[in-house]
Image (cartoon, rainbow, N blue to C red; front, side, top):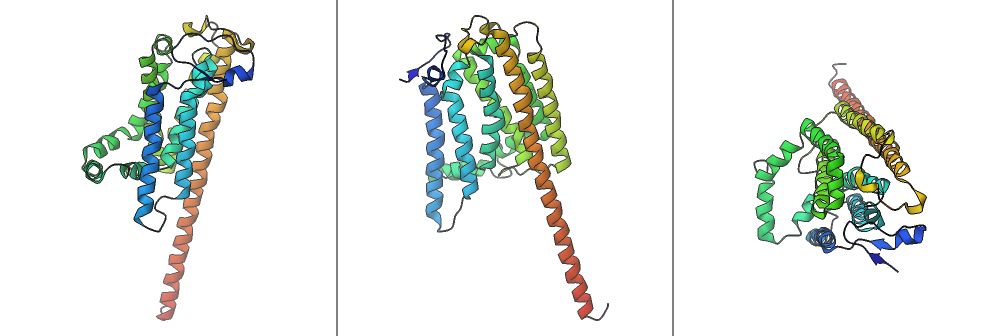
Length: 308
């Protein structure tokens, strides 16, 4: 039996995995925006597919969107969200999934054009104008995705929402909790933009600076994780009277959350760094091959003219 949970009251103590799977948060203010996102993407994809017999949106982009959308949906409505009000490590799983998995996957999907095609023609044309190089939204997006600004906003969002008074308030009041998720997810999208560079704002940040950008983010993540892992006392008062689900006490729960931020969180950064390194090497190899082909063509041309 599935049990729906809305609000921030503590749950009955859970001792089995089945009890965990029974708790879902199907609040309308969560389900409606998610349904709009999924519906708009599918409608836009359908309209684009009718324009030509050729594939307009690559299968890989669609798979990235499905992956990011599934993660986004699960962490907002599944037991991960419900038990995040009682367990710090569950809340950490939710934040890591939103910021380190869902956000970059959705950017890799490059869904802007698909979403535009979900609107009627007149609205689509109006929106298209604000995305032109001189459009208002294009200018704002270009400004906030400047690497220094994006990095500072991302780090500030993480640290600000982990201030004990702010964090506890988010767990006690729903509108603050919603704001927390919106700010952290938005900050993650802005943060990953200079690394991934989907249209309409392509990233021109050189690969060495992308490495530095991610490494500095990794460093601050380790610092915050260490503070949470090695704290001598409970950092967040909200969890002090939480039931000990599966026998997890508050101190173990807090340490587990810190370790999740530390190790899996760091591995996500290292994964991104590894992918960037592969792309960088591939780009260098293509440029070398292109230069070699150009040099060979010039040599043949000069040979044919008898100058060699």
